[in-house]
Image 1: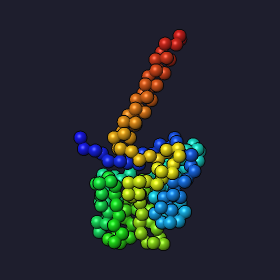
Image 2: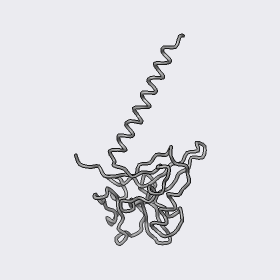
Image 3: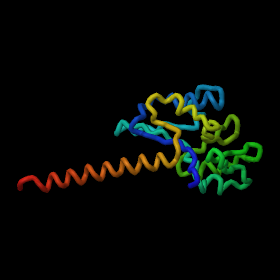
Image 4: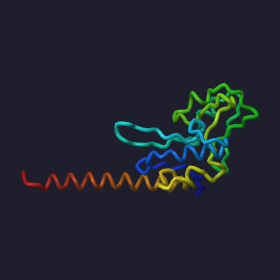
Length: 169
């Protein structure tokens, strides 16, 4: 069977909202500690007290790649990622507007778009996240973990239903 490649696996329940991932990302790529230049963004749901790390999903049929009028966005199968060639990019920002995850950014200073490039196979956000809210794992491992979590929820719900049925009325 063909390997699925590695992906950034996000576990929002582990994220503390420290935003260290944003800072190490911007330092690694741009040499500045500036969350606005980060390729990973922490979305905060105030009312739920929930933090969700958001990054490029490296889509197979990436809308950004499809919409690019000059074909500056291509797929690197070796690292299973979507890449931007800034020598070709004309800065039209079509890719920014079409991304369903909001993962493509545009830097007005450099006049270039930017997105997660998986740090060439060594994602810094993963290296520095002590909570492992962001991990870099084989895609099939993510699938197995999600199946297991779903199965546990279903099992718990079934046990609860059986327990309610067996209670005296």
